Structure formats: C-alpha cells, structure tokens
Length: 163
Image: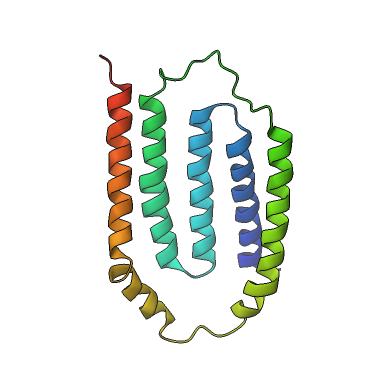
C-alpha cells in the first residue's frame, strides 16, 4: 500500500468514528463539535482525492458556516431544553432497522447505477460546467440557503435572549 492509500484509510476511519460518535453522544454540544470533526475529515478526504475546490468549499460552508451556526444555536438556547427530560426515543429499534434497510437499498443502487458511470471519463469541460452552474443556474438557491441560515441564527438569538 502506498502512503496516500494509508492516509485515506486512516482519515476515513477517523471520519466514520466521529460520525458514529455524533449520533451516539449524549451531550448535544459534544455532538456538534464531533460533527465539525466529521466535516473536516471529509474535507481531508477531498484533498487526498485531488479535489481542492471541494475541500475548500467543505471547510468554508460546512465547518465555517453550518457547524458554527449549530454550535451557536446550542449555546444560545441551552436553557430552553429541560435537563431532566429523557433524551432517548422509545422507537430506537425500529429506526435502526429502517436505517439499515435504507443503507442496504442505497448501497445496492449505488453499485448498480453509479459505479459503472463513475468509470467513464468526465471530459475536459465538466469542471468548467460545474463552475458555471454554481454562479449561473444555482446562484439563487445558494443565496436562499444563506438567508435561511441567517434567519435561523437570528431566531435562535431571539429565543435564547433573557427577558
């Protein structure tokens, strides 16, 4: 095995472990920090796959905006949640079964449809087309998402402020 392959496996295991810890942690703030670690692991995987643009977008959008927004919302609304409430759902077994079945179906569909398509060459203009789509066709949806995130942050501040 080469060094990039070993790094890919190590970072993949760390990212997967952080993702599992996000959903199994009992502390919401720890889950938010672990989610940021998961996003950072994905960014490192993008760097190892020679896609620095996606890595930079991952760091800026997911770590820099979404994770920070979630952490601020948790820290500002900490007194809203009652600490004596049980944080466990009684239907956890059913949701686990549904999640495993959904994973199986998605893995099967990925192997049947996406894997053969990934072996084909992308072409020279694929990256240029992606960039043009981001600043042209999909510019409005990205702006709408930024406004929604801003409204969510303002709403969290209003809910959490002392009266």
